[in-house]
Image 1 (cartoon, rainbow, N blue to C red):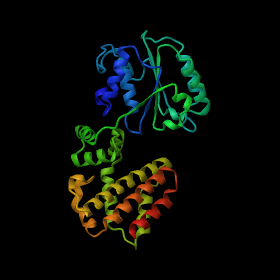
Image 2 (cartoon, rainbow, N blue to C red):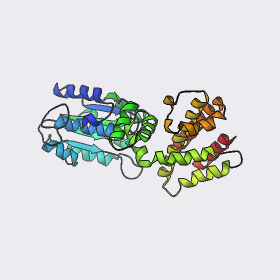
Image 3 (cartoon, helix red, strand yellow):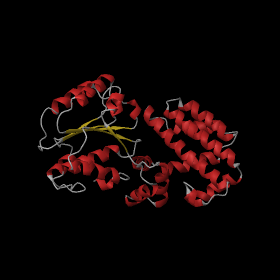
Image 4 (cartoon, rainbow, N blue to C red):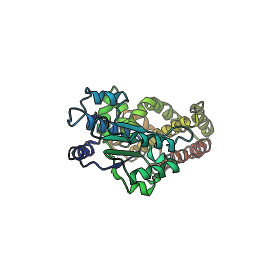
Length: 330
C-alpha cells in the first residue's frame, strides 16, 4: 500500500490530486538513489489509480488490486533491463509499443513503469523518444532512475521530473522494529541507510549487524605488524561469490567500518553517546578512542569512505583494501 512506502506521502498526494482532476502528465521521471523505494512506490501508485474503490490508497481486494499483486493487470506494463549487458533492448520497446496500440481494458488509462530507465541501449532510447514525441492516448509512463544524467536530455525534456524524498532515520527504525528487528539493530540500519528504506532492509537481509562483530574485532586487533593478515582475512571472507556480490560485500563491510571509526572520533572528542551510530557498543569503542587522536580517526574515516567509493568505481578490491589496512594500522 502507498502508506507503507516511507517518506513519499506528499508526492503520493500530489499524484492522486492530478489523477482525480485528470491532469496526469504523459511521462514522469522518478529520480532517487537505489533503495529509496521508486519501484514499490510506482506500483502502489498505479494500483491506487486503478483500484475500484478510488480511495486514498489501494483496497487490496478488488479485481484490479489482486491482478496487480499477482502481476497480471492488463493496464500496467513493467519493463526492466534484461539479457546481455543488463540493458533495456529495442525489441522490448517494440513489444511495448505494440501492446499500447490497444485501448485500456479498464476503458480509462494504461500505465508503463520502466525500471532502471537509464539502462536503455542507445537504439532503445532513441526509439522510446519517438513514442514520447507522439504518445499514445491515455497512457502514462513512469521512468525510474538512480542516474538521471544517463538519460537522453531529449527524454528528460519530455518528462516531469519528480525527486523522491528520503525517509527519516526514525521512520526507518520504526519500520524495522515493527518487522522483527531489535532496537539496536534497527537503529544501526536506519542510520546507515541514508534515508533509503530498501538499503536498510538489504542490510538486515545481509546480516550486517552480525558482520559488525567481525569487523570490530579486526580493527581492534589491527597493528603495524599484522595489517597484511587483516587485509587477507577481509578479502578472503568475501571470496567465493560472483564479482558483483563480492564487491557489494566489501562495500557493506567498509560502510560498517566507516561508522565505527566515525563513532570513535566522536567519543575521542567527548561527544554524547546519543550521537553515535553504534551506541550499544559505545564502551568497547571508547577503549580504542581513548588511546587515539580524534583528528587521525576522522582522517581514517575519510580514507575508509574513499576506499568504499573506489570499490564502487570497480577499482581492484585487493589493492584498495590492502592499502587501506596499511593506512589504518599506521
